[in-house]
Length: 397
Image 1 (spheres, helix red, strand yellow):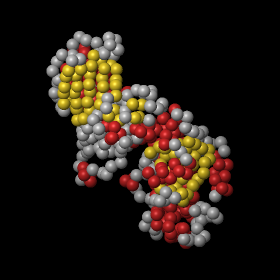
Image 2 (tube, rainbow, N blue to C red):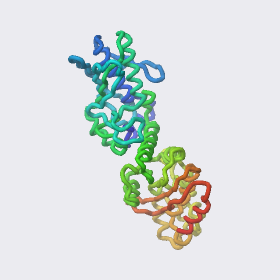
Image 3 (spheres, one colour):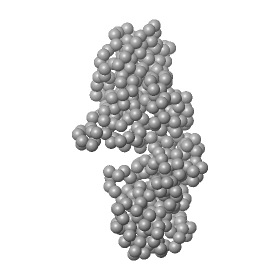
Image 4 (spheres, rainbow, N blue to C red):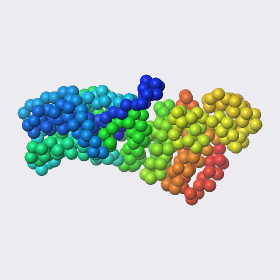
């Protein structure tokens, strides 16, 4: 469950000033819930309201709204995500707290704009509000603190809502994960670290968990929308089998090694799959450009002529290298394209990360138009039979 989406680098990054940290939706929900519980138990709304983060640090939040009627109190906090490009930056996180049955403890409900879980494989079962375990614990602790100060039991109903959350959730991975109706209430530390890859990698893990729990036997991780659409069409995959891997192929492969599925396709454009073939597990451009000299050497190792090798080495981009070699004859070994060569070496790199998991791995390389330009077909990555699998791929080439 994640609210992170692809966004342009902020002006703060461009100016290289220190990035400002922010607060998770879970932290904001906790602050709102504590303020509402304080009013429900008979005191005035505390403004600002102070809460404890999981690490014990106490922080304060201003209230954006308050209201109270018979048996229910409501408070809201505006989320500040700092300099992180988070779709929930600036949203109002609202908590309505009402008295619960004796001995019930804190019961959570999803209000408007907060999603409900509908598929297995997530940290909470289907039917539960998409309020993650860490925020739940923070809210329970905050309510217990207020209840203890009044000599009361912390038996309350807590409904968390986010106005406009259902529309914002369409920009996240929630619909793919089977979270319907809105956003998730997230957080583990309570703090948002700007441009952290942790949230994206966590969403990759949750996507794999949901697919496994739903009995999906074949998933595909793609670097972008074009390759995702192409690999989906190639294998007629359902949406639940598609993992928005982005640049984090290493994070996906390492998790699959511990939580394997029978068949995995790694799909991407020619530049990112060339990076994978060169041994890189973080495919972002900030980690470096494609090494064209190494790509030329890769082609030579797969049977390219000296002319082809030299033409690749002087290319300005990977796309130029692919276009140029398509017009050179002979290109590589018989019936082998540059895309196939890249796919085969990328297969070896990915298989080394997955091994010895019982997984059949495929690499698919697509151009910008979504056309398949290279492929290393399914073969087991386990140590047993690996050499036969590699030889089989070469024979099929």
